[in-house]
Image (cartoon, rainbow, N blue to C red; front, side):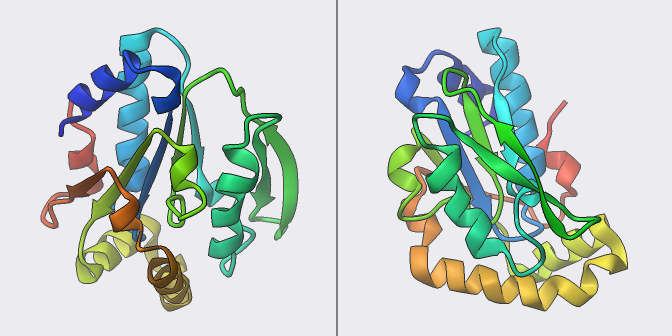
Amino acid sequence: MTHDRLARDLASARSSLRRVLVDGGSGAGKTTFARSLRDGWEELCGEQVQLVSLDDCYPGWHGLAAGSRAVHETMLRPVSPGYRRWDWVANRPGEWVTLDPDLPLVVEGCGALTQESAPLAGLRLWLALDEPHRRARALGRDGESYAPWWEIWARQERIHWDRNHPWDLADFIIPVQAAEPDEALNPA
């Protein structure tokens, strides 16, 4: 499934399909994919598409489960949706970000797709790439600042995967080519 076809289908979709979850392991290309999807969707439907990156709301390096809960507890709720931004510099909760329940929404990040969030979304996507290639891409993207946190984050991902089997909850599994950089997920 191409970005263009997916964006076209979403632009013409009924309102229940206007919530999209993009999950996958660290380094799989979720952010790049979600941005490309949002951009194509906006171009085709002529309206703003909200994009939430769970990186903005994980409460620190040990916060995958809390960020994951925020998807179904606050982001996808029908009344007053939003999320608490995490201030990574000050290492504390930041401001509340309000989401418009009438606009389309894409949520991307590790932990986006759970047993609780899946029924609340119209489209669920899993980006699949093996761990060695994901790690190389993540460290290549974030540099050595991420290296000491890789295993801490990977343990949280494994807990999430054991509990939710997000690939089984996905409508589509999108294989990511290991030899391609993140930019390849965003075709020109």
